[in-house]
Every structure is written in C-alpha cells, then in structure tokens.
Image (cartoon, one colour):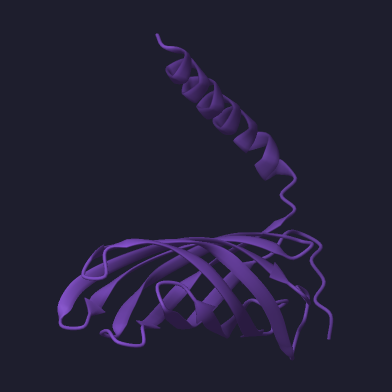
Length: 162
C-alpha cells in the first residue's frame, strides 16, 4: 500500500473513530437550509442556481458551510458547489439581525465552468434562534448575491441573547 493510501486510511479512521465521542458532548450548531444564488459579470450572462445548504457552526461563531445548486447560466444548464468559512459577529442574536463575513471556494460545471474564490458580507435574521432568512452580497465568479433560509439545531444549554 502506498504512503498516500496509508495517510488517507489513517485520516478516515481518525475521523470516524472520534465521531461518537464528539457527538456525546456536541458543542456545535448544526444548520441546514435552502438557497438561491445569483451571479453576474459586467459583459456576460446572469447565473441563477438553487439547492440545499448545510453548515456546522461553533458556539463562538465560526461556521463551515457547504452548498450545492442547479440552475442556469444565461440560457444553458449549470451547477455550482461552494464551500466557505464564515464568521458571525453576533452568533447568539435573537430577535435582531446578525452580520457575518465569509470567504471560500466555488466550483461551477456546465455553463460558466470554472473554479472561483468567494468573498462576501451577509446579514441573517436571529442567528441565535431555530430558523431565519439570510442575504449575502459579494464576489465569486463575478458579482454574487444569495438569499437563503436556515434552520438550526443547538447544543444542550444554548442560550440566545435577546
């Protein structure tokens, strides 16, 4: 077995062996939702994709998010996947807006094919409560805007800040 395969096998073993222990004392917020992402460039077609989104958020406000979407770029079919790291400035906000910054990578297949860097600013309603909308604006394959709805599951003992 090659060195790379041993390393991959070791990584998988470490991840799966630690999963039950991590679940026993979960201190993270699990999020899922739906999104619609719009992209545009100065002299090109507009892209629109929609699909599922999932994220794992620390209680301190760092969030690792993954989204997938299918749609169109101009008049041609397109699909987009994004992985991003976000930082919420007020992760326990309840009944008010929470602001977050994000950055990551996007991959597009079909029309608009390519890999892109992401940088954006987002606002979401009540990130400390069980659900709410979010709006983002920034850059990623041109100009990028997103609307989303997030549902959240909090760890035992979670207390939002009103």
